[in-house]
Amino acid sequence: LRKWYGGTFKELAPYGEDWYYIRAASIARKVYLNPGLGVGQLRKWYGGAYRNGVRHQHFVKANSGIIRSVLIQLENMKVTEKCEKGGRRMTRVGQQDLGRGINIL
Image (cartoon, rainbow, N blue to C red):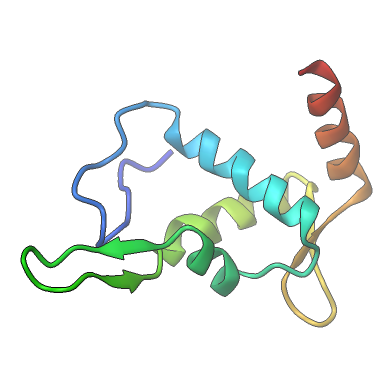
């Protein structure tokens, strides 16, 4: 687990020690609900407003390094796989794992 957290628009790093696992679960759920989702779309989803003090705020995309590392780890665990047209989708194993997690809740 890396010690960095990217986000130029964030003022503070996350407080919780398990923020990386929460983000990984969130990304897995997004890929499950939207097959073909890629790093660029996830950067838009997790982006936010960059506040410039007294000047106007602007939208900034999230850091792609964290998203990409989570997707690579999910792919190594055989939870996701790459689509032919680009992006990622859930494998059969990933769908079963997510289904088991939903039934527990």
